[in-house]
Length: 269
Image (cartoon, rainbow, N blue to C red):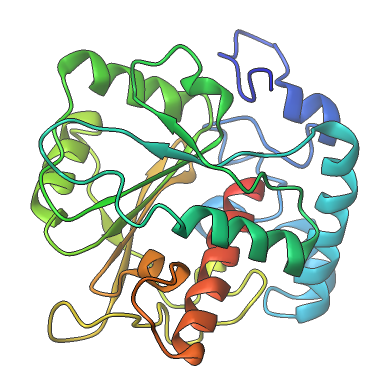
């Protein structure tokens, strides 16, 4: 697969924009001219005005349009698992992503490769993957060069989904502060589109596993007007994608539904 989001120069279109049209993906960092599916800072889009922000037909119409265009623009999309240093088990639950990919294909028709890629931030092919997944139980540590590469990944439009599998919260937050020293992980409101794009979660994240007392929380970092990092805490969504924990069917269903939402939202932010 070629580079999904090469570095943009002045006035240069990305492959996604050539395939889908500039009006769908607004110029990065231009909040006043936002005309995409979901706009920054509460600005209503044309689709939202016509169909209503919370109308199921609006969401399904948007997704059907995306699926049609993606089928002609790209082949299979492959989810990449981030391989990191520091001692944490980045490889945890190896069947989680393949299981999620199968569910995405079955439920939405999006062509997602069932096998996951393993990439480090220094790999030459890092920018071939628009969706990075990171999880684990322990410490995450990025070198100075890795911090620069991850920032470039976000500059090029990449999306990172991080799922705390109990024990990586402190180190993940520390490393994100290196990447975005002027931005904090902020809790997303329950009406944020990632909770409603395909399946509706009116109370935010489902709780799959009990790691801490209290409710689960979803945090995000916004870069150039778009969500680029989504971090789930006190739920362990990805544990529900694996068969290893023998979770009840209703918990696994909630986990898959949330996973579908996360993936689809990453495509159309």
